[in-house]
Image (cartoon, rainbow, N blue to C red; front, side, top):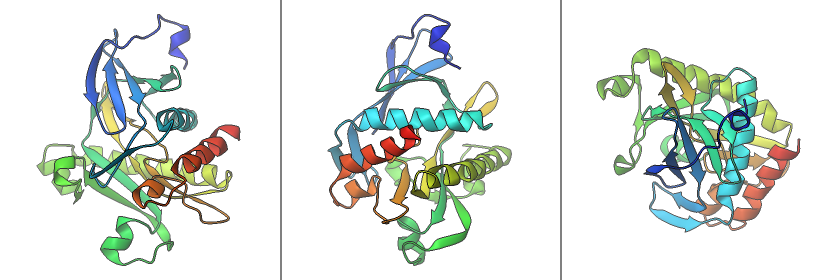
Length: 244
């Protein structure tokens, strides 16, 4: 639905929140916000900081394309419209403070915590829950923690995991067609008028992408690990996402 063709253009009225990668603005409509993508880059829960040229433009374009594709396949998302290069019009969400990470191939903290060899293809995707709290370094959690903390009900956590599994089943073959291996990815969700919607973004900031032929890392690991070529990697993902 391209809502801006049927109503007055949305304007930013008040800065509601500024995070590591985005700003969230109120609009004239209390049910809608504008998500503005920044070029700032952080890693290790803000311990490493920098900037990636045009990252905001790239991640907005990728996220809008992916949210549109997922919406067309029955996944409820917060996307309403892409307003411009950096701004996404979204439904306002009551964010559920749970980060849902889906892993298809061993990398990152899965290797560090459990001793998997990097690149091990998992027989079944692993879905992990993390508490969304930078001050606590986003610790690993389970359903009981979420309920005890008053973050979500057991039923809501079940919905988050079910949606993550469905999204993974859609994204893996979609990226494979574009010669990208979806190693793992982080999702965030929120409540909107009694429904749980996919929020935040899906981009090289929140996913690990490896080139299917060379194994080259095409995501924020290039920034985390000082591999260089960060802008080129993000641009390559954008090219493959938008051109097919």
